[in-house]
Length: 317
Image 1 (cartoon, rainbow, N blue to C red):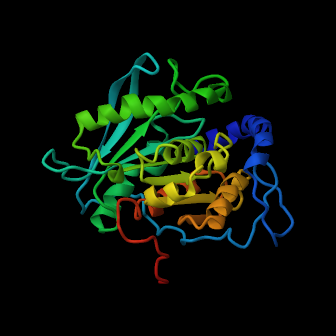
Image 2 (image 1 turned 120 degrees about the horizontal axis):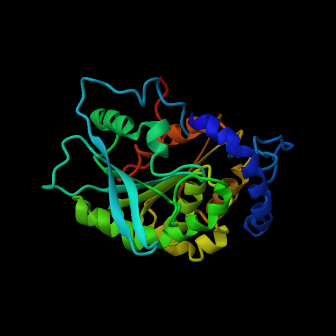
């Protein structure tokens, strides 16, 4: 169902991408020795360079299928007061198996795309099961995962022309920092250290992850944009101080599909990071702008976040 909805949004998204994409020139960094561009799903031609390859293989079969013989966490829908928006808003929160107020947990804020809401990740990626499986296998740490509605306006439902709500995704930065995070840290046993706080998201949420994460390094140390949309700010605006970024970012994990017409947005940031020797992961798989890419990205990102070990390619089977 999610895939069908994304396809219906593609035509509208194309118009929006072309309009905003004109401003991306200032964010462009030339890539040499690249093959001729090919047509993308939407957003423009795709031009792949030598760096645009998969860092990880496809996830194993059943990575988001429930297993009966392991402990399970839970997802609950809660409400919080948003002074930014002036209303009560909804958010889905995953707590891991054995959640207890006697210990502090790191928190991942997981953001959706322009056609989604606080239920989008739950519908197609089954995060509770994905995290249950990874935690049981010792591949991910126990964490709280917060899945909010990134459309910070009074009517935040997915109705009418979803492109008209694009400005509300920028407003969400204030709602996130001033309303949602304090609510989560009051209601749950959440670690308040920036080193225990991460932000990741898909498409529009990927752009938000770049924008909010890199511009608020006092709040987030772990950043995971998946197939970021054109709401992404120019990289020079996101990283005005290269040394500060090197000092404060624990992990910048960027992904996109090689069939995604928006890939140039993430490519530009990857090239800037490479040029300035800022450590990061750049993962380009065989998917497009679709749920397969996003659920796969969450699977691999989740195994890196809140861990001291450097991301590494899995050993060959």
